[in-house]
Length: 511
RNA sequence: GCCGCGUUCGUCUAAGGGCUAGGACACCACCCUUUCACGGUGGUGAUACGGGUUCGAAUCCCGUACGCGGUACCA
View: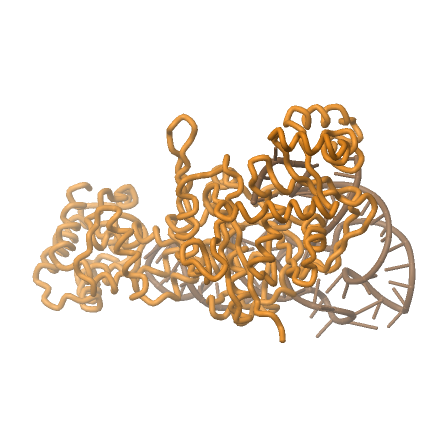
């Protein structure tokens, strides 16, 4: 019988959650759901110097917003708790020591300065970054070069030390990546990675193997940047005697910056004016000030659209379909169709996805968000039914939820400024007089609905020998403030008689 | 430098030896609309290069170029 599928997302809580991170979560989630498996969230906080308060809570909030909640996590617990590596610290040492006993790892007492000087010493034009590997191992201060007694004494004296893996000099490590197929490495070219740090914390390399084993992870998804260290992990699985339980690996392609090449970073977002983090993130800088980085959520993305867009960045179902619900993705997702090459992030396309989702969202589901966004701009909506009508009328004009401020704001608030310059060039006495008559007409109007208003307005224009087309734009600007929005008479119908007349009068004074 | 991974319109991608290399975003034009948007129709636009294998290559193989990733007591 096949093992139950278990996957994990293992972020390091050091700041805002990057788009690529969310995509990794998504693929994990889709795979787990599709196979009736478990999705685990594990916090990789083994670097105490990079601890950032609030970053962990931020991750929970992001996953919640995206609707990709883990089955097990530090927050909800689970059978393999604790899920925070800092709380699992005591677990790791025994495995590292076991490897030392087996001759697969060794103690290293080199101080940071000694490592620097080694790199300096072996640095050449040919080899700009020398590694701590079999070539220099014997020249360093470690249990391979030292005698047993010397090593024992250093340890007894409490000299700080790390444990490093002893990479074989001449072996080939290969494995089958679910996305890339057969991948292989020569061990002689890989360095002796630190497994256990001097502070007793494991490095990623040890922790990921130990925890994936202990947590019975069956499939491991991670970014392509991890591919070069895969041979270390594979050897660790083998040396620890767990080879039969090793998860299947899948190294996901990177998300690249839109211009040029390279991994998409927060900086690119700042530079090009689009978000990279899922939600707003406020970083505290060293000088005590804070720096806010905008997120997709606050910029007006719907989680469904965000997820949909991310899913398509590196995967497709082989048809022309681009719009998918989470459920459809769970149904249709397949690792074989995940691409090998990285994808440049295109914010315009991201907005298109969001626009599509806003258009197809039903009005009721948008109400709460629109209400909140308008409230942020000092517009409180009392009439819920009216809000519904407005949303239905303007949602096809909104690519971002925040566009509702401009597209719906004038329904609830008299415009602050009017584009009178668009009226003035063709304005004349006759039109001025006509709008005086319009006000009279509106005041007498008893059937206040779009169709009747339009009919009445046009009749009036005809009676005054004025082409309707010449006064429609002025009317629009009076009611809306600018040259945009749905049908003018629909707008008049919604804002009501009193407000319509107020706006017409106000602009008449400005002309 | 070394190692690994990649490479189809500007961008995301389809085509897994066989019709004029298909779709989407963006862009342009037209239609619809007395605004904007939505919608509709059409257009510009790609297999990095060089060798093989084959009747036939975007597709398989080799090389080159380019790009990216890694080369930390960071993940």
